[in-house]
Length: 183
Image (tube, rainbow, N blue to C red; front, side, top):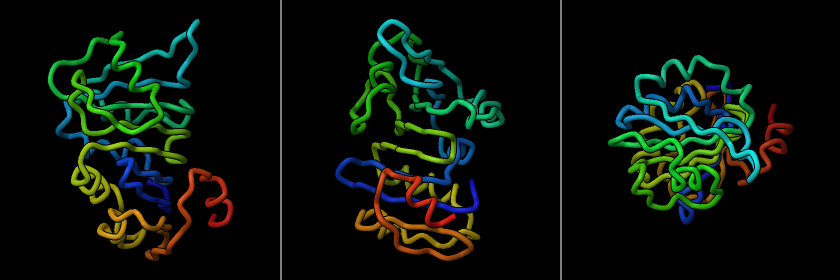
């Protein structure tokens, strides 16, 4: 995790937006998953579709050691059960999707994430709040500050955590505007 955390929650969309959480911070919360489907780079085009990779749980620690920041934009979704077919149209459509997480029988997962410059911007869709709460409990070091999880769950405000202090912040997808003011 970076030395700060910007975070807000939209309960209606079941979506969390954050800056400061890197992919390696999420791996412990994926312990129950059998793996992830990863789209590296941009979503691609009709003529040149994006590449999708299916990674088993055992491969995730090695992925955390890669320079995920160098991928630029990437998307991933966790899966349980049998690995999805790498060319499964339903999986590809989900990772190219920008809306709310919809039930995806092919994956049976808990999270769908879109990230830009690992740790800079994360949009995380989820199925159940308890999964997000567990992910954040394991990812946020106490040195950043104590986030009020009940307030975050309600979704009223955004929050900035740094150096043991938690401050209310605007809810925005314009991460640069927040970071330019704060860092």
